[in-house]
Length: 196
Ligand SMILES: CC(C)(COP(=O)(O)OP(=O)(O)OC[C@H]1O[C@@H](n2cnc3c(N)ncnc32)[C@H](O)[C@@H]1OP(=O)(O)O)[C@@H](O)C(=O)NCCC(=O)NCCS
Image (tube, rainbow, N blue to C red; front, side, top):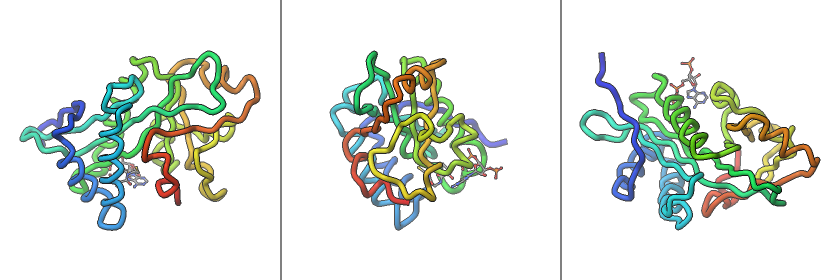
């Protein structure tokens, strides 16, 4: 039986290891862009400053090597609802290729969602494979009038998803019938991260 992995928050000192992991998980085409995204987001004052909807969690092996990582960063809803709805987006999620399909990605995501719930987060968004993220409790966001910051081709519309961490949060938000845009923190708001 393999040794257990531990989940822990990352620090600025982990950035080189997170970059290595991003290159390994996303490969030579996407890896450099994801590593740059991590660098930008983890160094962003809102994220580095300990915002309640910012969470960077890594899985480490007994030797301390990072083999999985998930990042949540705060998002704003526009127009802003009253009362405010604390919300975050999950991006990116990465697992060392040697350890994929063993449940680590889901474990990291679930742990992060539980910690965000405890921090008072009402909604979490993701842009990703519906087959993967529906298992984690996400469902298409468009039905709640919640639009991504950048348009997504209609064929990928179901990839834009949300889940409520507080009972009734989506129903209360959508009750006014207003369509809202989800505005990301820092580099995640750049159009290049929203392509298919
Ligand atoms: C996507 C990723 C994070 C999943 O982590 P993981 O630890 O391998 O996945 P889990 O073990 O938690 O879940 C495995 C299940 O998810 C599904 N799955 C795994 N990777 C998937 C992918 N890239 N797309 C769709 N489904 C995937 C599989 O169906 C698998 O189910 P199965 O065992 O019944 O076949 C990981 O494969 C990875 O790092 N991929 C490269 C980076 C990436 O694409 N990240 C997501 C976008 S931000």
